[in-house]
Length: 146
Image (cartoon, rainbow, N blue to C red; front, top):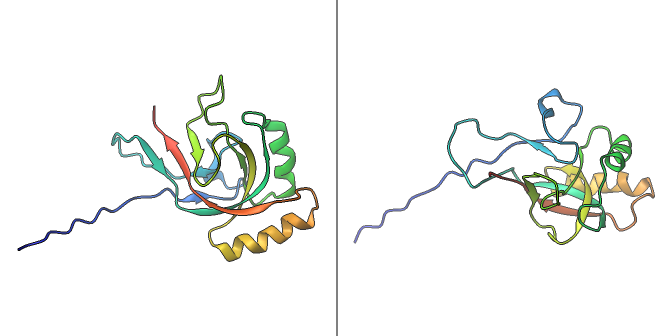
């Protein structure tokens, strides 16, 4: 009896965590940037690598404004602040995030590529005393193709 094992290599997009980096340009103000393939292959979706975010607050879906994100971004200039707009009326948003309740809106900030980095960054977030209940969440960004 012969068994053949097939391995599938799954490519994941590299996160661009620093909004000041020119390589991160071209994304909406509320999305975290990540590399996507430019190979012309049809896909249903493409995922980023896993990363850790600090969920700063939850709120009703579709209620986050770009002005609010910009104000929070000033607090953490080297770490991208992002939010979900997936499924919002009048939005052609194609990014959603894993490990988040899709029925709830959120604002988060990139915390790091490891849990230890995220826990350390959470201390900085907590030091601001602006986000009670902020917590670390491992997630991926998912680009859904039309």
